[in-house]
Image (tube, rainbow, N blue to C red; front, top):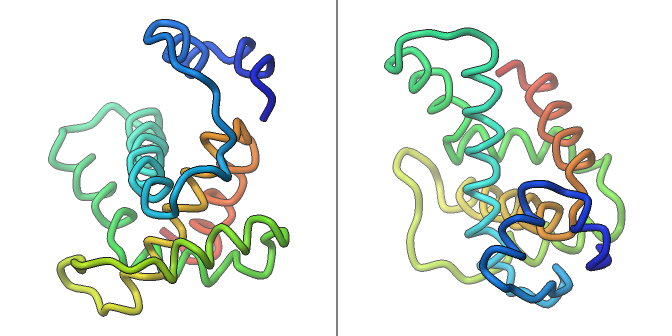
Length: 148
């Protein structure tokens, strides 16, 4: 994404301007840095969908969101959309999946955790690159295909 494209985006443009941050190419970040922010972007999308679907008790929102945020679910999601990824997206996902991590999520295998990390790296990349429509499209398609 070019720096001038961020100027038209209210949230990230405000963040960059408000904190006097430089615009860096998304491809310059490490896969784990991409996964770090991608985890949060995924959670923001997840929670936004849950809250906007219906104003409910927080416990019900949490239950719905937790089901979609598990490494097992994220591994299923990436498996469901992997064939739809562009060459560039697949390369980002693969870098994230293959990154050396020293922990694993509760209630998941190491392989599932790696796949989830790859998905989060892809989401972080798309976010930092300003490809919001593509980011939402992939998550939505994945959720639909795995019925969550």
